[in-house]
Image 1 (cartoon, rainbow, N blue to C red):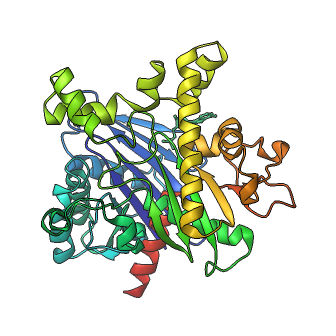
Image 2 (cartoon, rainbow, N blue to C red):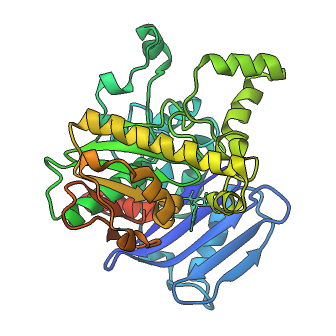
Length: 399
Ligand code: AMP
């Protein structure tokens, strides 16, 4: 079966068409600047030249219809007709407490996703727009929602509750939800395969280190604790997000800088993290380069970040009662041997022992530990699209 995976942002749309017989993408692409001047669709058929299509793209509906046209285009398309596409998997950021797994979309599911807008006001509306547009153009295939939060719904209350009056949880559903669930799920399943162990009994710490970053403790294949919280702002310091703070700092900044509540929220999400600390960039490559050229604040940002990751690994190995493997994934985790070394330095007490030569790898699935290490360190490139497609296939085949 061929499965189309759709990931709608506020002004962008990423897609992949996968052939599930071999789990490979047949085409992928990106629509940018939806609703803005200069909108563009970049379509890449597997093994072919990339095609750039410029058009007026006022909304997600037009974006999706252009994507479908590209997929069947006689010149650069990859299928003869849309009938070859058996199902569509949609990435949805927030499923609240309602969804602990992926689901076939029906009216009731749509209403529940709409109820979650309050929890993800920037993300769920474009996800919903994408689903609606796709349903209209492909009414006869199953549409499946795959949530970033679902994998973390197995967290026990002692992990997801904050030290706030319980009534606030009951009234407003303020609790830790966690994000990047599709990525953590994918790499943890791959880790079990690489280690040749059943998920039952396996204790994993998965470090998704990209522009957004989060760490998850996974026991028996289930998330038991994760670093992102009510929103993706909690946890590790990230490219532009502050991560954990003393909550009193927020109102202090608001007062001192004369920010409204929206402005302080925007500031903490977009101007902080390694960008704010280094003053150089949110991109770790730029920061490593600046540090190599002697920039003190760039070096400091890398030190704070790696210290943050190390602290969470320590905390999560305590929560798990030991750890069989630490996984590094996403842009930085997959591609920075230096960051992996820095993070795992002094973790010998957990049984970590990296082979520096093996670790000198970028974007490949490799166990970078020495043979005698009792806690393995794995580099596993994430593949959220494949995870979405696998869930979609399973649900579509269930009928
Ligand atoms: P992602 O959000 O997963 O796309 O990851 C983006 C982040 O990964 C950016 O901060 C990049 O700087 C970082 N990254 C990608 N490649 C490398 C690399 N070779 N070395 C260091 N950081 C990298």
